Amino acid sequence: APPRRGRGALEPRPWIEPLPPPTAASWRTLRPEPAQSLQDYRALQPNVPAPGRDRIVLQPLGHFPFDVIAHDELVMLVRAPELTLVAEVVEAAFGLPTTVLPPAALPETGLRWRSHDGQRQLDAISLIDHVAPQLPPDAYAMLSLVTADVFAWPEQRYAFGWSTYVERLGVCSFARLDPSAHGGPAPVQLERTLAHRGLRIVAHELAHTFGLAHCQAGRCLLNGVADLVELDALPLRLCAACRDKLRDGIGLDLRGRDDAVAAVLRRRGLAEVAT
Image (cartoon, rainbow, N blue to C red; front, side, top):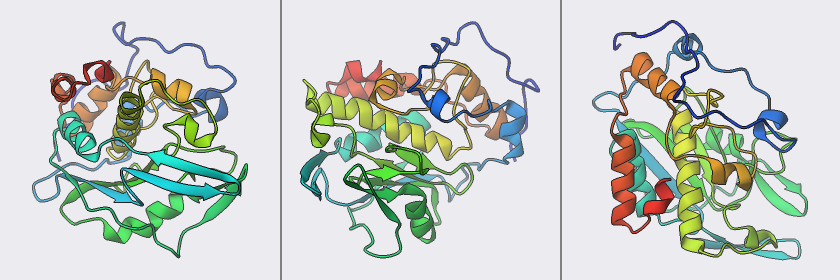
């Protein structure tokens, strides 16, 4: 294992942008969680990327780049961000080779679903359990990408995704990126909005697979997200405290990764998505 370095606990740092007070609709209000200290992170014995197990795998499940889903009297057109863009940003952000597998159908059996507000929603945790045996042996982590609406805990209206800290598995849903799919207003710049929101969800869920819990130290990619307001406010970068955990806990140093992500987005004509 790499050497454990640094302080025994994470102290607030002046250059970490503070979080605003939570509102009634904030993740921190709806799902209170204790802050994860460096000791807590180490106690998880987080996974370490290693030769022969150092690849991130993205597995699309459903129809891409868009899907038509009928719920009661509502017909939803769900759009997803460009998957090659997602892979390029993931590889730049985490410094690991990233592969997008061919889209596959969602399993017809073995998954739990519920009906909520007239919509059919997939239990994200049941999907993770179902795909666990399919984790490639050379993969550090595998993220399932779905167009289905999902939830992860019973009181939740919907979820953007769910991931495990140790099992290296997660799921990311694109069903809620465009409110017009649910009868709301359409984004003015749809493609840029899909990229902005989709990249943040994917990077957030993958960061959990490295053992990182939701961050409460300040503005961070790992802030909890309950709705589109919080998703749009999410930065596409980890704060200094979460970088410390990765560097001191598993020897993964992400210095320069923000610049690498920004370079990918500039090349794609999406420079503003990096902010």
